[in-house]
Length: 460
Image 1 (cartoon, one colour):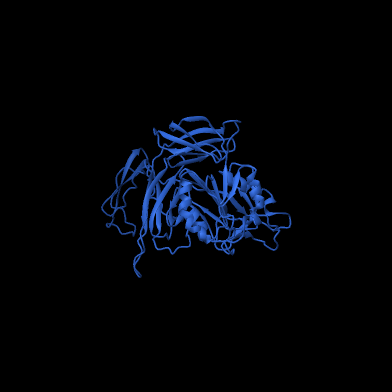
Image 2 (cartoon, helix red, strand yellow):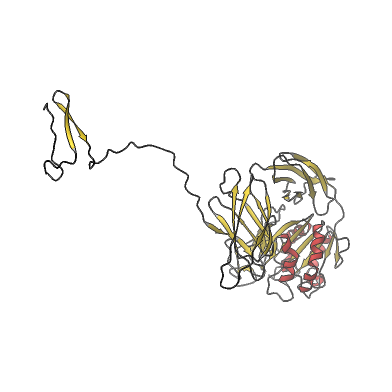
């Protein structure tokens, strides 16, 4: 075909009402191609497909519950929503450890796609501490508002913490000056940063701002403290040698363990074990390096402020608690002694999930930063312990459960915390270290690693 043809029928077959025209154009002899001439009603050609980078989707917002210790107080404040972000990228910072210190204790770990919520919290002033691998530790104060009047909505508190990346660390090793033996559990501090020496005495003090200069304090119970000036991130302090000195321990409530019983009647074995390593006194704080309160009664709460100030100046305060239903023991007194350090000995009960007989004890295993070999402790029943960073749990139950609450993990039953130049240690049980014969296998103190664990906890 050699000519052209126009006015082709439309889709409904009607000639002359064509919405689109066709023109036959010869290319080669005997070969034609159809060219569509578009009018207003004709379908448009499909445009070229352009490949472009996919846009970053909008920030995913979710809320993950943090952990909150309610301290047996009426919670009068709002909920705190916390976002942790990178100062350079604006993205969320994962694996940030959050510690919230104030009238209520709270803590948690951040994620890459969610924010954290804590609450309700008691109204008041709080200190927020956020640390993450590779970031400079951030400290800031915040206020939790009181609830509004009945019938009105409480405004939530929303805080965004901006973290600076590129933090450095200081490394070193701590040993005994005379023997050269490693000093596990030695604590290393620069400002608000803390590290514990491991079993080999080595430490890494992280979270320090690049280019900063620090006075680094190295302390260990039973040793004279040392200070190294001019510590810089990326630096190595080398081997720090601490000189041993005599150690004095005061069993501070020896006349009223469990609120009423003399220590000699229930803690004679513990006192003897401590006496192998230190001078042990009873109810005599003069010259003491360590003060131990075993299942304290309510009268101890009145001494809490003075005892905490003593710890801040370099003393070590050890509180052995109990579950809240034990006669003569005051959970409020225990809380008054440890709360300011970021620890709570709860009034709940950890015990075996199959408690058919006293022989069925839940075990507790030591965890980092516990620097000693002892790791297998037998507890018939104990209170759980709540620790907010920089406090750290050091003993966690296995196969137990909390009667007074539900936990997503096996509950901690012991913790340690720096407090000024001193240290606070807490355990949720006292009877495990006693001369009692709960299992028929000898004194509780002599079962598994109970003796070595509590001695190390006190002397740490």
